[in-house]
Image (cartoon, rainbow, N blue to C red; front, side, top):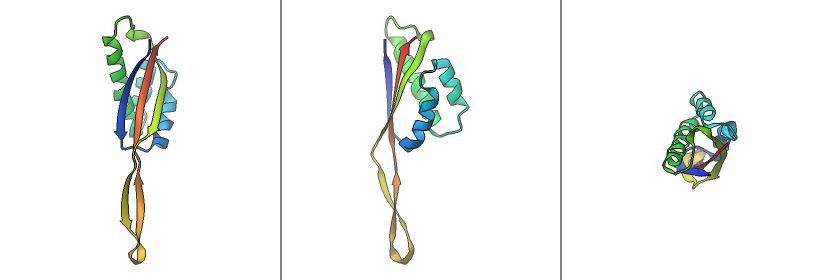
Length: 110
């Protein structure tokens, strides 16, 4: 039985988040959490908490064995982009795009 958890508006670009998401896809939950614990990326903290949240969601459902869960899929979608300006030479303004992403973790029983 599938269980999912969603986290939205994370201030990390989706491209950087997908690099870490690919590390944990298809792994058992215990392995995925240990990988994320030692991954030196900003998104790993959010992904760690999100997987723990999905496990908590699974524990509230009846008929789901928490010990045999694995990460079926991690979806990283693009969120809204914050547009900022930085001063440039001769009175110009350079645009800075601060990207956000939405994370979805889907867990399933092995």
